[in-house]
Amino acid sequence: MSKKEEIEKLMKACEECVGKSSDSYEEHFSDCPTCKKYATEAEKLNKQLEFLEDLATKPLETRKQLLGARIRSFLSMPDDKRKEAISDLLDALEDISEDASVKVVKARTDIIMEIPKEHRETLLGVLGDIMSDWPAERKMKEKQAVMKATEDYFFLKRKMARKKFSTLLK
Image 1 (tube, helix red, strand yellow):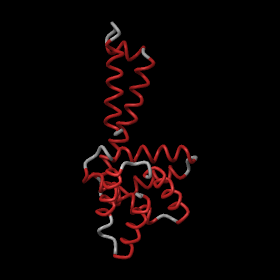
Image 2 (cartoon, rainbow, N blue to C red):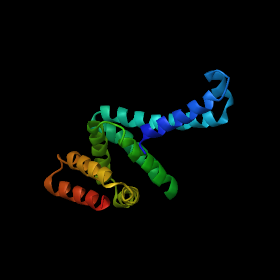
Image 3 (cartoon, helix red, strand yellow):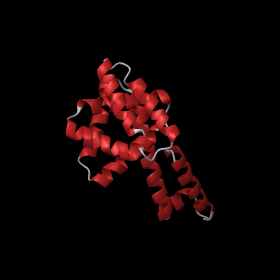
Image 4 (spheres, rainbow, N blue to C red):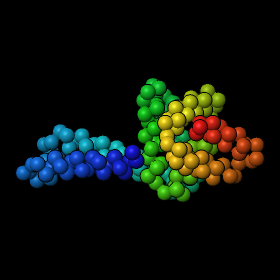
């Protein structure tokens, strides 16, 4: 489910809850623990989308710095938290424009190609686990984004990067 669909689902659930109450929206939101939880989750999802949308507007080097900081934070997480955080980030890519997605994938791919082997293998392992559960259509979109993101690589680097991601997307 896309982040936008998740936000919509939370909003509908909250609307139903508010509809059962005679309180104003403000009173309901301040008193209802369920709607507070929905609001917190929706904010979290929206921040992920805003981060990626904003990231895509930045120059490549800035994108790499910002995304690199996020990736470094992933590397310090326990395995289960790392997978969840990376999955959340990847899921948010579905909700931004194709052009913005390619820009984020470009920065991500560049970072992966630039980091030491140990970290690269850790990230690629998690990406492979996450991507293996994707439907074929989603894998194809990712593959196309990687193809566009690596167009400016020199021939051998481009072939290696594309092969690495093709392996993950099988």
